[in-house]
Length: 426
Image (cartoon, rainbow, N blue to C red):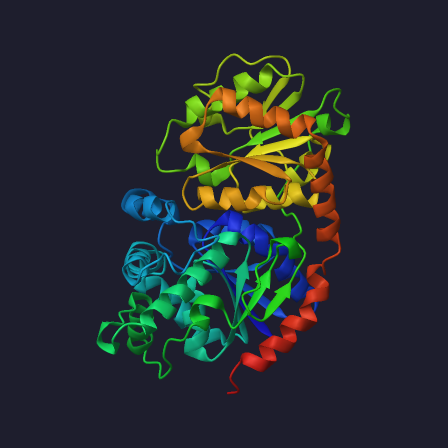
């Protein structure tokens, strides 16, 4: 088979690498459509890159879509009570999310280039990450099967919210059943000269590839291929100091790429300084992964704090008693893979406070909404996770659940079967 992977960002691409290589080692051709800035990242992973012009992800969200982000963070879509949400509420969400997020991230230029690539190469399957709806459009345009890669609860929230919207729409008179998402994608397919029209699989995928453990997955009635998450940190060099076991409980602090590019919504330097001052007062060894440009406002650090530009999380976290981070999926999933308890920051970008509450239910972590952050609250949460045995016990239980899942190589036959069932014969 020919398989086209679409990815908007480097950290998102890293999630796809083990699956891509499983497909390659099964004998399939794999290419990754990505923005030019990601070509080196893709080729360093030993995969073939197809550069296409993509809208600037962070710039778009940061400069033009603060209203959409703020509105999203007010929603508790983890448990939408359909009786309480009016048609106007749901229509407002669709009216914001389509022009403010989905259309800019999947611009006409990007879609045209991706469809052109698909028409030239004729993939059998397109695997697209959640926000890259252009991947679904390209698949539909050429009759390929397509699968949506799911990595976090927000993606199920989107589907649940969409379904509530559709139910409310059926209660309206036909002339009032506005659907901005369907209209946009119908217009797009028509503009591309396709005889096909929008259907809901363009938002859900014809099937789903889900890297989350069973206890974190929602039953949405979708065809799903569960795949064990495998950490991939890109090109990595393991530092010599990691060979020595820590003398005290080791705590990792990382805010990742996403939050450190986060649109100047708060003073990152002050946040880091408060966190490091608090951690330095505890009887722990701290490893803080902080880029050089973020260090100018840091306080004088104690002897128990080590600051590094980069350290591969897959090698660091097995030595840690706690990881503190921005609730990014890669860091969270790597911590879970190694059975490490966590403290996460929520209420930024698309990591809503509601998601933090959902994460806490498994008993492996505590969440801190950024709007509530204080050194005192931070210390309280850190000390709780370090001293209450239940967090470590639950993290180890979750690790065993993850290890019981099929690794990517064992999931390939299911993907092959679903591709054959959904692609159109030419």
